[in-house]
Each structure stands twice: as structure tokens, then as C-alpha cells.
Amino acid sequence: MSSRLVAGLLATIAAGSIVAGVLLESGRPVPATEWMFIALGLILPALGSLLAFRRPEVRYGWLLLAGALCLGLGTLGVGLSIRGGYPDLLVTLLRCTLAGFYGLIWIFVPLLFPDGRLPSRRWRPVAWISGVAVALHGAGLAWAGVNPYDWPDRPLAALLVAGVAQFVTWIMAVVVLCGLVLRWRRSGQAERGQYAWMVGGVAASMAGGVLVLSSGTGVFGLAGVLVLVGALPAAIGVAVVRHRLLDIRIGIRGSRLHLMFDVRPTVDEVLSDLGTAFDAGPEPVELLGRLAAAVRTGLEVGWAAVTLADGRRVVAGKEEGAAVLAVPVRGGLGRIECGPPLVTGSLPGALPRSLTREDRRLLEALAVPAGLAIQSAGLVTRLVNAQEAERRRIERNIHDGVQQQLVALIAGLELARATGAGPDMLIHLREQARQTLADLRELAAGIHPSALSQGGLAEAVEERCSRLPVPTTVTVPPSLRSRRFADEIEGAMYFTVSEAVANALKHAGAATIDVRLSQADVSGGGRLCATVADDGTGFDPSATDRRGLATLSDRLDALGGGLTVESSPGKGTRLTAWVPADG
Image (cartoon, rainbow, N blue to C red; front, side, top):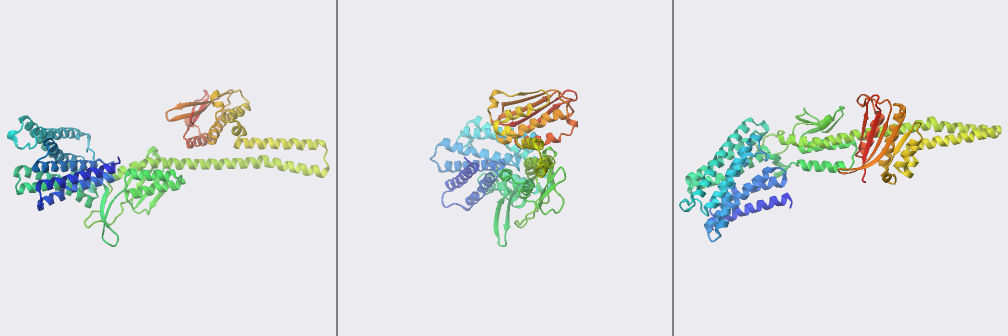
């Protein structure tokens, strides 16, 4: 069952119970005071359903819905008890939920304000004591029976449990209110208005409870009930309108006065949209641009920028004013910055918006895909540069090698035709043509060896190592000899081995080389590995520029694999490459 459906169901049950309970209690015609109770009581399920519907990951909306459900069921229980004729157990259980309502709106709603989390770990004992007190209060009322306040006929132990638990609930409510006042005084400008209305709403609601206890069912008691039920939801509603509580805004849009009731996209929605955009495979610059645009839209700021570690910068919007919020991207790859919030149309009296802790949380959440985007952009750039360098190498080899040989062969043929050359010159030209053909085949093998296309990775590696001038051992498991993998996997592993053995000969002066191919099962799937070890001079990997290996490492990274090099001066070198490959 989806969270939206659950939120709608809970809100409907709460609202229906409030209306039904009032109608059962008062009968017809319904007095004006009862209509006032219904109107004030419906604010809580409306606010709770809105937050839970649009912000299901924020606990605060579900907390308000829980309070609304307790109010509705308790009101229904009171109505049923007054109307009479219903099972005592049902009526008792319904009325006991009012204890949960008091505990929620006086303790947990202000304690977990504004995002459903405790202000700090120090408040955990208060939350646990309050939860136990509220539960015992409800249990004591249930033990006492249908009308627990008819104390002469109730069990003394039940009254004692309910009374002590209710007293502890009041004490915890005062403690939470004092803590809320401290948080209000210490809050920033962007959140001060929200806390002020919450302090006022909680204080008024508790005052209404005191008025009910002291005045009974008289006029003051009725006023106390209305204040108790409506003060806190009304305060939250004002915080929504004037101070954009939890990023909800109500405003006026367009030239006509239409009411706009909107909510900013959630973190999950922004990340989902980014994931869809990234799956489309955009160019690196476009990818970073989409990320900056997502930050600008998600935070509703004038501009947002993604700055890379090398100084490159992609900006969404017109960059005016200094950055008001910035977070680093993981791994030191750069940072995300955003400018001042946009000034949008809103209700008269609404205060200008400032960036809040929720905005920073959204920006920090976006730093994760930002790091992936920057890594992807850098990887694509390096691969493009490597491809361009390879294209130029092939062009240079053709120009300096095969092309010059063909030119010389053509000139020799022209000379032979003009001079009537004898058999010796023709034999020489034939050998020259064969050498040119061999060089052309060698060049083609450097692009994509025919042995790799026809025989697979194992055969291509063995063919490459068979032509080396030093003893080379190639070890391949029998199960791997007949296996074929995707072209990109076989190509990446072959050229990694080829580059490794070339380095062992060219730079390390190796006397022997050992090449091993293997496949292993690891968590998440199979892994194809290639290991090249030599007994050469070795080197310090941290102090050596490995440009050739960096290109191969990027190629393996693009396939989800990796490359490691183990070496030290005088102890040879061991290179291990791997890519994901199902066994």
C-alpha cells in the first residue's frame, strides 16, 4: 500500500470520526460551538495528510496524522458514550485515545519540530519517559472503565495509575515547552518565525487544557476545549503561510488572484529526476548543467553552479550576488554553490525566504550524484583524449611506415617497367611487398588482433606472448579457454596485458614474465582477472608517472572494473586488472 493511500485513509478516518462524534454528542440541530469544534478539529488531519502526502519521508506529517487520529477516535468515543447503547469495551478503548492526543500535541509535536527528529540525543530520556507516561495514562483510563472521572465507582489502583501518568505527562509537557523556547531564542532568522508560532500554539493549547480541568463543562471549559484543539494546528497553519514551514508555500500567482498551494520537490523526487536524466547518457558538460539546474530548481534560488577542482564551472541561471550556500563534493572533486533565494509571489505579509537546514540537507544529498557526474565527466574526457591520441598514433604509424613503404614499392615498380628489370629486381620488389603486407598486418593487430576476434581472449594473449624475446608463461584455466566475453571486455583485457608485457620489456628489463587469466565469483557477480608479473627492476608506483596505464585504467573503470599495480625497486612488478563478467 502506497504512503499516499495510507495518509489519505488515516486523514479520512480522523475527520469522519470527529464529525460523527460531535453529531452523536450534540444531536440535531448542531450548536454553533460544536461546528466551531469540527472546523478547528479538521485542521489537524488536513495538515497531517498534506505533509504525509507530499513529504512521506518526513516524520512530522505522520506525527500530525497520529494526533488527528487520536483526537477523532477519542471524540467518537465520547459521542458513543453519551448516546448510549454501545459496547462498554469499544467506548472505553475509543475514549482512551484522547490520552494519546494530549501527549502528542503537548509533547511530541513540539519536541520533534520541525522535521520529525529529536533536537539532540539528550532529549531521548524525555521522549522515553513521555511515551511511557502517555501509555500508562491511556491504560489507566481503560482500566477505570467507561467513565473514569466517576471516581467513587472506579478501582483505586486504576485511578492512581492514570493520575500519576497524567501528572508526569504535564511535567514533560512543561519541560518540552521550555526546551522549545530555548530553541526559538537560539534559532536563525530563517526559522525564528516558525518557532515563535509553535511556542505560542503549544502554550495556548496547554492553557486550554488547564482551563478545561479547572472550569469543567461551563463556558470557560468550552472555550478551553476549542483552544486546546485548535491553537496548535492553527499556529502550524500560520507558520506554513508566513514562514514556509517544511517548504510548503501558499501564494498568489498570475495577474488574477488565484490561490496557489504548492510544495517544493522532495530530495527523492530531485534524485529520481537526476537519475532519469543521467540514464539518457548526456554529454559531460550537459550532465553537469542538468545537475546545476536541478539544484537551482530544488532550492528555488536565482542561480546554482557546479565548480570542478580544476577551476571549470557550469552555472544554471544568471549569476548575480555572492553564493549564500556551498557544500563540497565528496572526494575533493569540486563544490556546489547556490545564490540567493528567488523572490516569488506570496500572500500579503509573508516574509522573505532564507535558506534553511532543509535546504542544506537537499544540497548535501545532491553532492552524491554531483560526485558521480564529475567523475563521469572526467572519465569521458580522458577516454576521448585517449581515443584521439590513439587515432593520431595510428595515423603517424601509417604515414611513417606502411605509406612510405608503398610509395617506395610503387617507385620500384615504375623503375622496373621503365628499365626492363631482370629477375633479381622483381624478387626484391616481391620481398618488399611481402614486408609491407607484414607491417600492415602488424599495424592491424595493434588496432584489433585477428586472434582476438577469431579465437578469443586466451588465444590472443598466448599469441601475443609467444612473440616475446624473453621466457613468458601464460596460465589459463581450461574452463576459460572456450569462454567468450563481450568485445569491449576482451579488448580491454587484451590491451592491458599487451601494455603490461611491453612495459616489462621496455622499462623493467625483465628476464621472465608470468601472465595469468582467471575468473572468480565475488559478491555481486563474476569477475574476470588478468595478472602480469615480472622479475624486472621494479619502481615506486607513487613516484612514477603512469600515463599509459592511466588510459587503460580509465578504460577498465568505464566497464566497472579496476587496475592495481604492486611494485618496489629491485623486486619486480605485479599488475592486476579486472572487469565484471558473469561466470
